[in-house]
Image 1 (spheres, rainbow, N blue to C red):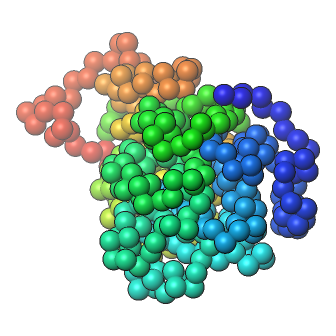
Image 2: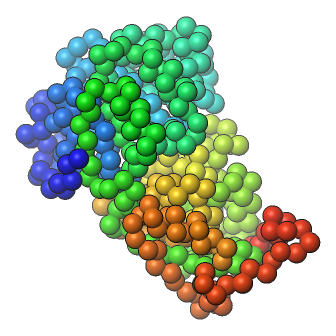
Image 3: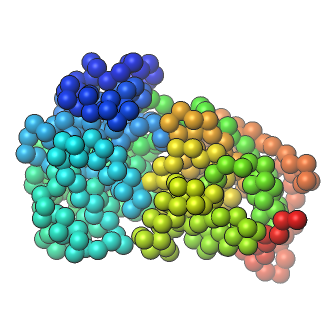
Length: 405
């Protein structure tokens, strides 16, 4: 794979039509990111691509510009498969910046939204369809969509779709597509399961690796606090007093996200939650409110994390470490986007040495351990976890938020 990180000064020389370059300049896109610089010339030639780049580095335009250029010169259609509703809406927003002025219509097919309205959108003959695998297969089963004119397909955040168990649905979609299609895979991590898809459904894909799989952006400062479980909420409050900007907090479970959100609201913070138990309208309101500044804090689970594209998130807090170490990369990639500096802080309990080591293996670096003056220092080597009462570890009480004085 090509690991050259140098970038061109503008979009000229990448095989993009002058009309598209003018449009990009008009909407303030003048300098390609490394993934755009490497992927666009390959994609405009119609070649298959497996692209690896950190989250927040411009992957949507890396496949969107070549897709739109090719569609302008044919009657074919494009398909973008994504793991979450939020990411589908984000991708459509980015693509419409260049597609709408050129007459390219889109349709978004996601769960939680009206199938009737989606069918109406499909009857308007959209040139690009952005979909989650489950809802797309629903429409295939209903006969409201055909994929025989799809000649460009993108799997965005392909690894996450596999984490969420979409592989059978993805393969069903791919089997319904023309053989001679162009296929592009993009993500921050490319595990073995994604490589298998590439070998089975792609034709000699070109690898474009801007950073090693699992690498986080260099402008993200990472910290690790080793803390007793019952002290996590109190440390979180200390961090929120220290950092005054926008904060994205990750919880391992839906119920945990609700508990954290309610606790923060009780302390007077403006906070919203986003997870699978929330309706599509609730998730959209929370995300839009976070973007506009209505909410300073957004609490999310991994299943809803993709698609949170907010340029200036000051701090990401891993209140709970992720179940899958690779999700750590995607979580912290929500900060430090578009060249901004960011900070990511993770809270680990003394018995989570193994989880931290798995993350460090993915990151290929040690996470720096920080201490807070208000808490007794703990480390993995000397900590004695003594919370195994009559109820066992799973019955340990959850720490409570204390009202600020």
